[in-house]
Amino acid sequence: MNRPSKTFALFPLSALLLAGCVLSGAPRTGSAPPLSAAQCRDLTALKHGAPLTRERNVSELAALEEAGYQPSLFFDPYYPEDLQAAQRQVDIWYQAECANAPPG
Image (tube, rainbow, N blue to C red):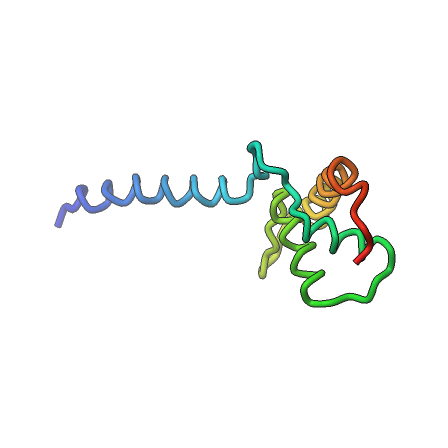
């Protein structure tokens, strides 16, 4: 009736899953630019009042996720602060990388 080996075998798996969840929400770092040319084009179009399209919305959401925002289907105690922080980060990237992007 004593099964400590199965219980302890789940601890490393749980730790790996938890680490993956934590890291998936972290902003991306590295040498590649955070915003692609398409994201610059789409964000510029949105900032200039262009009509909303599915592609522009997906592009904006991808940029927000790159900045660390993880939309939740359930209650998120950090909303809207986490979204606003990601928006600020995307704005910083936009100003640094997309200054000359033509409106789409």
